[in-house]
Length: 415
Ligand SMILES: [Zn+2]
Picture 1: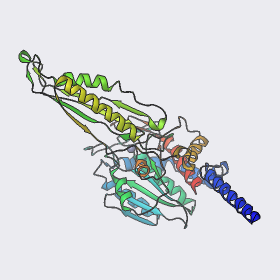
Picture 2: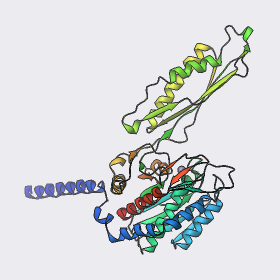
Picture 3: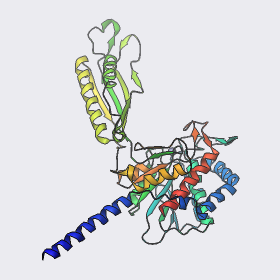
Picture 4: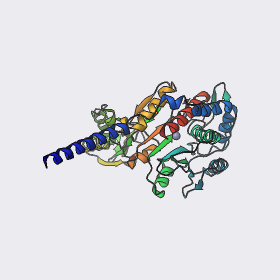
């Protein structure tokens, strides 16, 4: 009996040890120099090298198809036709307008979404001409996020060219409405009944990796009073005074900068109030941009802002209205920084000697939609660039090829 119990204990501790080992393994980087230096990966890289001019030409063509948020149909048709030509297994455009191309793997593989957004912020810009200056392309939307769409198309082209047969199933996804709040990705995630392993969103500068969702909790504070001519203003409640007092106190709120998961910041970007210089304002207001990696910290800061504004309103005798926008919540997945996915991404970037690697949990891309749902997700950069969201947006050509290598090598490591 005793010996049997001893055997059980041995088996049990063996089982625990096994679980511990598999836990450690699950969190180890999947990057391996052998993969990176393999003939297969070198073939992928040299395919990109051989096609550099064709890639640039297609990048220019796609950028010149205007696609402000809400008007992505033409780009969607283009992406769909590329997915069809490349022979993905199932191709569709969903009710939101997202283009979905599924590349089926073998049973038991991971289910990975690779996304890039089709929309741009340039409402009303109907004629786009891409200019080239050396290693830089210039046009609205050239980087954000057309460079990522080109990354998707050409990584896929390279994989097809070398005869890749994936183990994982990949959802190539070109989304709509990213710039208006990840609208397309939300529709996709709500309508596709799949337990995705990861969402990998392509957006932002090369080298930047975000594994958490930055939350937004700012809004608008408005003070109102009866108003009066300056000559009759003695003792009349003054909304401008309330604004001044409130901003002064709000800017003194102590916000955490560490740990990085709780990093929080606020800014008063706009002040509005009064119509003429010889009257007391009847209505004055200001905006608050409040951001944090932690939803509780957003709640804390909002509570302090409410208290301050309440105090100020009663001190100055004005009416108070507070509007907070809580649509984009902060979300963190415990252990995400040490996960196999994030470590693999970092190892891939280091191997490729990408400069200025930054890994933080303060992302504001489509990956957030996965993170909110508890799916380990990251965003990866598409190239280097400047003047984003401006008509003279710039994107780096060599940076695009490097970003493409990043994506292809990551896929090989995740297989
Ligand atoms: Zn973007």
